[in-house]
Image (cartoon, rainbow, N blue to C red):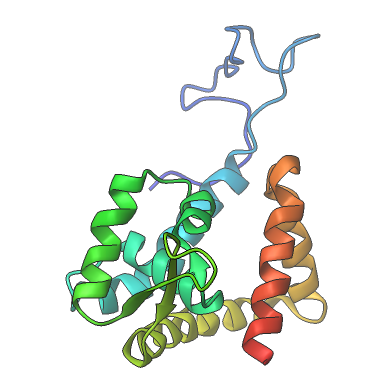
Length: 186
């Protein structure tokens, strides 16, 4: 595997090209990509989801199932429409995954009390147990990393990841997280 670095040169030692075809570092040229962080994010994500992937494979589930379980568990009574917005996937994709989770007893759908057309989602006890198992695997990995970084690492990571979210989505994500925390605390 190639070294992960923030070099603005390609493997031949030549100046890398900017998106507009100009050499990086030239006056007026675009900044060089932050290769190290880009690649570390790819590898960190691979390993972050890899632990749960092994558990999910036993159920013939994938990452979409994991995301649905996670958000439904954290937001009991969530509308299908809200889940579509969060996951940013098509209704057809969600429908397939949701059907599997419902058919296998991990998620249940209920009619809304005021609007019977609404489909509200809840994890079952079985779904909650699987969601918690997956979250604890990921928590172990996160805590190992925080342990290597020392005091303040949780807050720094939270601020970094929050800053990575598009400005127009950030407040909604933070509201969703705060609501889920309130619901789970009871």
